[in-house]
Image (cartoon, rainbow, N blue to C red; front, side, top):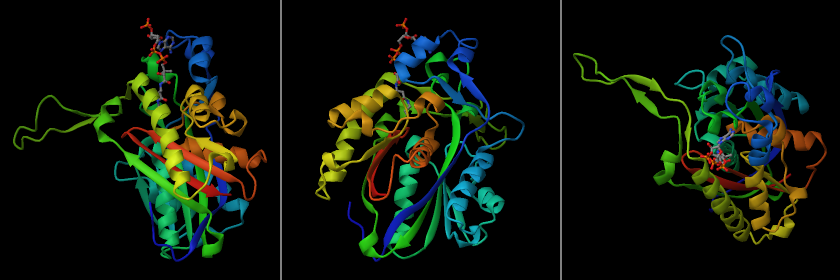
Length: 333
Ligand code: COA
């Protein structure tokens, strides 16, 4: 993928937020017929965080994650030009980014939602980098936030065990071309497989009597776990290789692999296919499960706080999920 660049872009801060309430596999086994042993051995997940309380939403989590990122670099929210909120679980079908904008006081920022499920953060990072590299904006806040607990079928043990709630944020800034740190990206979608993972529209059985319009609501999460598993393990190594090859980089140059935290076995299988040591794979699934658009920024933020990722490291970030959509972005930290 080639894009015209008049200036560079870099990530200058990250932040994250998790709900206070944790829900262990043991707790899960009281809800559906499952066990800690089954869940942990198949997924690597031990617990997840759930957003509880009346009217609590991704906006609450997104605000905390954003403020933490801003505080780290002492940036006033008025300096943000654009906010991209990656989410599939907005608190308003028209979007939640503007609510986030007002709650953090980023009054100069234009704000919009981007819906691409678990690939949402990668697509948002790429979108942000385009606005920066073409010179349109100087400071962009990208937030990945999801509360899939509101959309999970809590009686379906094959899906409800996987997901958790969280938010993560990254601030990107323009810089000189020579310091450009968003080195390359590769994005793909194959809508033929959208049926494998969806929260489909559910129309009412009868139409409006005068208008013949079918209104409705949304169903709960449906997933074909086996197909999604095979897709991720097949497509992500290809995406990473393609992205690296086109900038003449080798797999050996990767310092950290930050993959969407879907399943520990998926992370390991991808690393093995690429012959990357699992020591270079960032994983926090054990504590949070799959937090959809939040999973990558949450993992990035923790890895930075733990002094794993440091300046000049080559970080390869890949997301994948419903759509099916997937993609990779190569970053010099
Ligand atoms: N506890 C206990 N047993 C369970 C269970 C649970 N939570 N969920 C399913 N099972 C049972 C099934 O009923 C099935 O029983 P059967 O053999 O008697 O029919 C058995 O376990 C195997 O089920 P299966 O669906 O084949 O398991 P799996 O090995 O494919 O693992 C997933 C299921 C969901 C963990 C796995 O497919 C997966 O992780 N897929 C990727 C999902 C994903 O990452 N999605 C998000 C992408 S963004």
